[in-house]
Length: 110
Length: 114
Image (cartoon, rainbow over all chains, first blue to last red; front, side):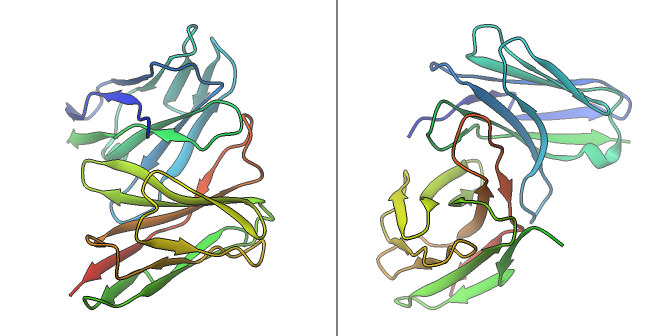
């Protein structure tokens, strides 16, 4: 099945730094979702995007739905230790199951 | 409390045994999903169901079976035909499977083969 290209695969950053990650697809999507997963737990929804060009924030997190509808970006500002985890993007087109990226593993050094 | 529950948290299976993973939701969602997660592989779709008494194969359905007899329940059976069943299994649900619907996940079940 199709998968999204998510990058980077992993990141090591200092506490307080900003973080940026992205997902790209060869197909157009109508929905982009961003999730965070802590070790041994299920993914938790962070931000949902439904419109090309849409920019949505959730606290220190900001995500954008790319104009081409083939990409999406997630930014985390002023990272803190609890931001550690795996971040997944997911996209959907029409009445089909979500397609997931392979995740970005974020490590924060205090 | 509304949400998705999966049980058990950890499950051990002997070689050649079938085992069933439970997934229950009280969110009144129509659509339910099962994913398998392996390290570095992201989430891979096993089966999904958009309505009671109906379900479709996902990308990696071989060696698995499901049923959807009730709206709130979507159990997954890992059969002995699944050659590499050790993984983290995630159940999810959404109101419907449409563009505008977001998907929510349960806490997961880790299956280990002895």
